[in-house]
Image (cartoon, rainbow, N blue to C red; front, top):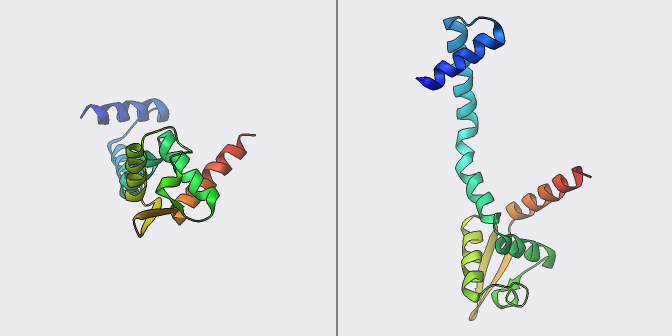
Length: 131
């Protein structure tokens, strides 16, 4: 396999030589590394994808700042998008586990989850560490 050939060449360059047992051991280490991170990748990408849109990210920030619930109708004056776009954004955020919703009469109310709060704290910390 071409990827294995490239790895073997890298190891030969790095170590000065590359025996079959060294090569196989390294492949096993890399496969273990892949297995260790593989299980969470899909979930993480879904969560990050949900935040990777200005409207959705702003909704999460607004909900977090509100420190409670906001009705779906309260987003319209704050976002420069259609009601349909707001509903779609809220649905994607709910599917990713970043917000919860409950129905009260004919209105839907939303709030952030602990997952969203943790991500926002991490993002704030990352932004602060650059200063």
